[in-house]
Length: 349
Picture 1 (cartoon, one colour):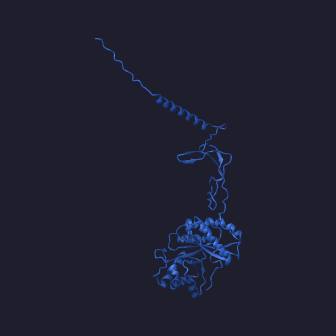
Picture 2 (picture 1 turned 90 degrees about the vertical axis):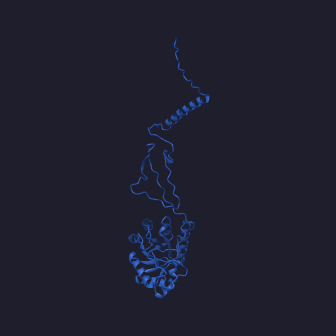
Picture 3 (picture 1 turned 180 degrees about the vertical axis):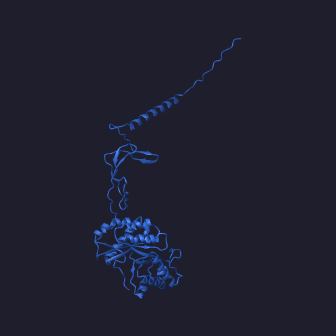
């Protein structure tokens, strides 16, 4: 019996025309992509690689090379950060992708803040007095006020983490230190903080607390009230505060947190001169409102020769930049700057 040889049948692969065209198209696209990339990153005549602006992993990497690089545009009124010593600003940089050396863009000079009013010539030898309350919680915020190039007064809250350090920095910077004495407001929901004068305290206790707080922050030039609308409306209690201030040989600045303040009557009874606020700058805390109140302060100074304007250290992201921008113009218009004690704004009893 003859054995039949078994032949293995080779399976025939049948491809449709559509699959063949799809396969050929894929090969074409791969080849075209490789050709495009080789052209894109081909070295020029000088052997340097030039690439277009690309986005890598969602982060824009600008590597285009031009003869001149446009300067960074600053938004009017915003504070420009100065690069630290040894930074690369203004130096030649080498692009990491292209390898081309190019000069870093030079920043334009910062433009003054946009002022929604015209600044008049100062009248009556107008003196501007700026007081900034609520120091003691942040040295970083405080420093922005200490860097301002004119005299000012800063009121420090007692018994906080940076109360003593803040007072020391203020004195070292040549500015004037006040004790920002906490007192109870009309609203019982407001907690004035440690070292406060509270409505259930007697006059002896009040005098003792004020003198302790002065000793902690001191030496100080004066005292003003933090909150305190309730205490300032009570003649006996605000009287105890003023007696402690008078005994300590410093002045009192009435922040006027209430229109019914009894400070004028008590000061008259004690024969004790005092100062009072004219303007609150940052309530609410917006750039527009600060500029509006600053304008009112200029008008007040032009009328009576000085204006005492109170702001807060926690507005460090707005007020220092505004005042730094406007300072040269205000000075050019004839305004002068002073601390509270040097303002000539003392109210005699």
